[in-house]
Length: 269
Length: 269
Image (tube, rainbow over all chains, first blue to last red; front, side, top):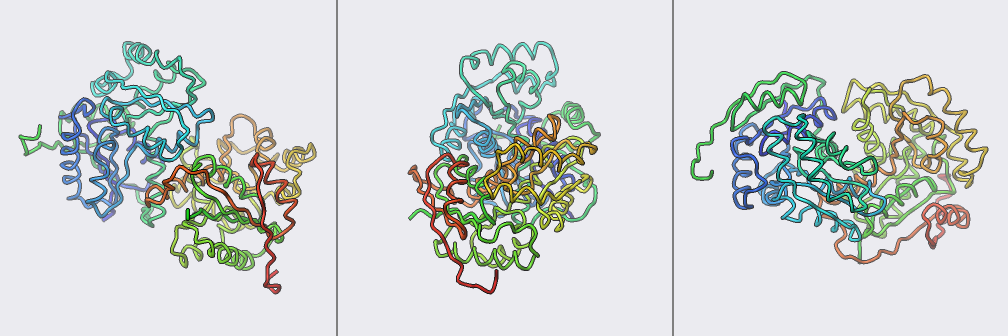
């Protein structure tokens, strides 16, 4: 049995991480869990997000994955240390990879971060950036309207482009040279975000950067898939599987099968 | 005492890695060893390069570094597995980071690699790329004239630009979308290389990418420097310290002190 990389998210956002892992590590098998019944996580309080994250991790552990990727910035911000401490396999989040890529990219030391309320409120990006490079100036902004647009599949609508432009307008006065897309849903909106920010601001996708770090860590631990087989990925979601499949197939450009999961613990929603 | 990151190279090439580590990890102390008395390593046979690498590592171990970076592609290609197996600290080479960055960057699956004869002959990049992504097409070429130009400090001369253009001309018929600078000396020549390759080929510096992976690994091992002090770096070289200091200060844009090291083992040169 080929051990898989298990990826979890509040919904469809982590598919941006999954797609990049599939592209950068084409021999690796993916298990993906989208907690669409309870998305978005951004407005929820930290304790609730921590509970949900433990629950999904426990569900995924039955498949004995070799690595867990918390492909949700909100969950990474509040839960990764606890999850890492209790699991025997490597746990990768999406915040530090984006922070490291911004440090590599910036030349003027002005870095922007956009994310959910939960992520921005946690200050996790500022902390990750300043821990490594104390002189970096960080400007961060919550964009609560973005995730619901993606979860409803409206990421290519004209109205969406306008909402993105209006939301990001206030960043235009800051001399940023890079902007971290601090939510894995945001690459769905990257054309609109790039248009709003203009050509002088490099967008850093925590999805792309996380895939690269997954590759780095698997290599250094001697855990890369060795056999040149084409892996069969598995997808799970807690909400409407039809909507999930529609969005996932559109983003991944391939047919997938989705296994619906009904939470048996009613008191935690 | 702050534990340092020890970086070694055949000469001044690894300064491109050192400079990026200083920029991306400004709180880390660097020990740098340039084996300028015996550069270039490219034309030497593998056994000799392995012996030299062990010898430099042994020299650096007296300073109890927390990590060893083999910032020489030729030495990484032939010696990293042995060095990694015998040391208790993490050992990072420069080949896999460049390979991972190329996999992330390429869209048409055509990747070019330029390096020394030793690196190209070893096939280490092809192996690193294909281990992860078997469908990638790799075109590799040795450029034996490049390292001596850099070691002589002639990296900004007009004649150098012409030599670079002539050497790389044969790559123009291949539809590469990225080119790995598979030698840490080559970022000294990156303007000339970029000009020769044209705007459609992205240059991937194994120096920049290695610095990023050093950051990733130190983070995941909980080994990042914690105190916000300005570190004092140390430089060692086995050849002419005046020439080494001249090149290093020009590249790093700062004043440094160089400690000359005279090898006491005459029979290995």
